[in-house]
Image (cartoon, rainbow, N blue to C red; front, side, top):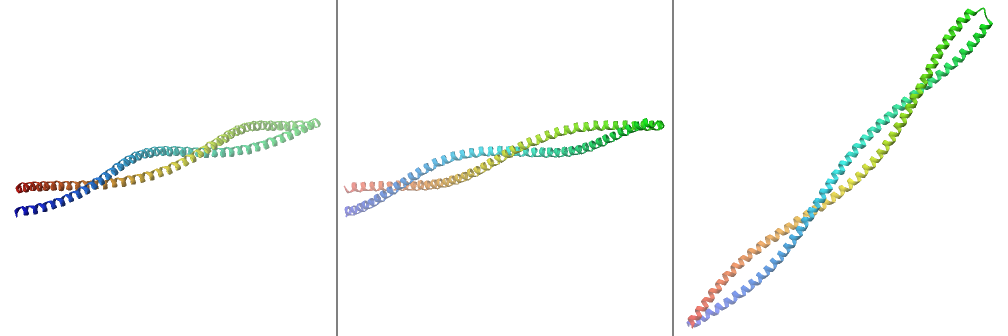
Length: 291
C-alpha cells in the first residue's frame, strides 16, 4: 500500500514536473523572443544614435554656414550704409554746385546786362564826341569868319574843350571799366565751365553709386532669401532631431521594461530550478526508501 501510494505520488510529481518543464520551455521561448526583440531594438537604437550624430554634425555645419552668411550680411549692410551716406553727401554736393551754378549764371547775366548798358553809354559818348568835334570844327570856321566875336568864341572854345576833355576822360574810364567787365566775364565763363565739368563729373559718380547701391540691394535681398531658406531647413532638422530623441527615449524606456521583465523571469527560473532540485531530491529519497 505504501509503495502504491508512493508510486501514485511519484506519477503526480512526474506529471507536475512535465507541466513545469513545459512551462519552462514556454518561458524560455518567450524569453528568447524577448531577447530577439531587445536585440532588434538595440540595433534600431544604434542606428538612430548614428543618424543623430550625423544630423548633429550637419547641424553644426549649417550653423557655421549661417554664422558666415550673417557676418557677410552685416558687412554688406555696412557697405550699403556707407554707399547710402556717400550718395547723400554726393547729392548734397550736387545741390550746392547746382546752386553755385545758378548764382554764377545770375551774376553772369547781371554782368552782361551791365556790359550792354556800358556799351550803350560808350556809343552815346562816341556820338556826343563826334557831335562835339563837328561843333568844334564849326566854331573854328566861325572863328575864322567872325574875327569880331573872337573873345566870345574863345570862351566858347575853352568851355567846349573842357567839356570834351571831361567827356574824353569819362570815355576812357568807361573803356577801362568795359575792359575790366569783359575780363571778369571771361573769368566767370571759365569758372562756369569748371563748375559744369564738376557737375557732370559728380553726375557720373552719382550714377555709379546708384548702380552699385542697387547691386548691393539685390545681393542683400538674395542673401536674406537664402538665409530664410537655411533657417527653415535648420528648424526642420531640429524638429526631426527632437522626434528622433523622443523615439530614442521611448526605446530606452522599453529596454528598461524588458530588462525588468527579464530580471523577474530570471528570478522565476531560479525559483523553479530550486523547486525542481527539491523535487529531484525528494524523488531520489523516495527511490532510496523504496529500494
